Length: 255
Image (cartoon, rainbow, N blue to C red):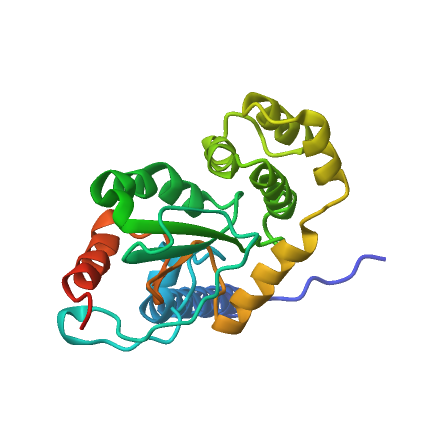
């Protein structure tokens, strides 16, 4: 049996459409408010953290330096006592007026930048006025080859070839690894058998670890970190930063 179709008025038919439109408007407004909220959050984040977003911080570029004090001429006055151990590779006269002690990592790109650019410029400019001392600070949490490379370099130092080996490691001609360490040793003219024995037994593990542990007590947290006559310089700074401190020290000898 057929049923009777209910009569509907034009108003009754139109009402559902009006409600749909209202719902759509509400949804659009919600989307708009959500978008505005997102944009506001991004703007706030930029204002608060903008510099860090544009320049990512890494372990080689710390958020803050070692504690420092300033004197006239913007030269750091506070000096740190950093002992030089027998195992620390160095070159230059022990009585040179300037001693630069570097805490470094052979897998650190900023250390490489210093080693291949600024280091040579300092030698060319100041010559025998500087004594350079190298200390290990391998950042093993981000550089898996840092510690093995440090051990290999110490083995090269045992045969009197640290600085040549240092330059080879930072040249990146070969990827860091066991085979490369031996190849560099042969390239440097070292006794390959003695080098391999030294490296395999990790002969200088304690010495490398001692450098690292001491550096942390000073507050070192990144590489490279330098101490110029005890004055801290953080990061692969341009030559001008080193020159300012060195010139200051040379001008004030005996004060």
